Image (tube, rainbow, N blue to C red; front, side, top):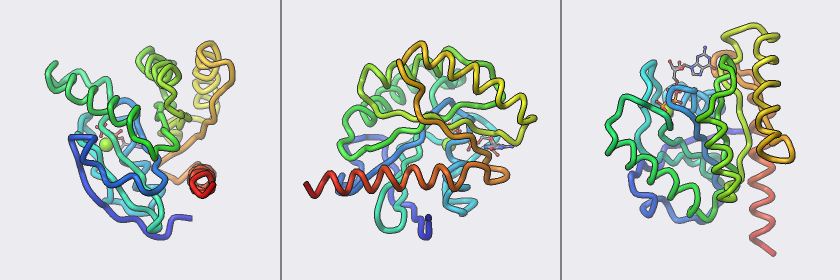
Length: 203
Ligand SMILES: Nc1nc2c(ncn2[C@@H]2O[C@H](COP(=O)(O)OP(=O)(O)OP(=O)(O)O)[C@@H](O)[C@H]2O)c(=O)[nH]1
Ligand SMILES: [Mg+2]
């Protein structure tokens, strides 16, 4: 259960992130998919992470301290066409450096819009995680926006595609920042990752 959540720091340089002295999980995905909203939903703090109807709101690596115990990280989105090439390359190298070099990172949640058919950019990103050894799980967002039948259809299609990339289907969660769907299940899963990380450290 998340009882306490505080903003710690924003960085453009992954090297300036807080000391990696505790477990950390991060949210990534296309711009506007709902990363920041999901953080607010999980922590029950509606303005903890900044959200916007316009894509490209989160531009830095944002660390939040949860229960004085682990870090939750909000990242900028990928696939945002409206920023210029230089900015885009800057973000991409910031994100890829963070994801591949952050030593205390025990889970990366790739957010996928449950309203959409499988998108090439998301599948490519998951493939990149696989080849780089980034420990990825999937979170489908915005499940409140259409019928359960439609959500299930899109999820099935997406998982079929991911199965073609990975041999197994990755862990996945179905969520809504609007009505709290998936909150307990996702929180429990993250807490398990944190516990595993901590018990691994002692050995
Ligand atoms: N109905 C509904 N709207 C959502 C949900 N999650 C996010 N939104 C809306 O989607 C828009 C984008 O949400 P953000 O949380 O800012 O998205 P983000 O992925 O952090 O976007 P960037 O920081 O730009 O990469 C906002 O208008 C949110 O209110 C959801 O589960 N349901
Ligand atoms: Mg954001």
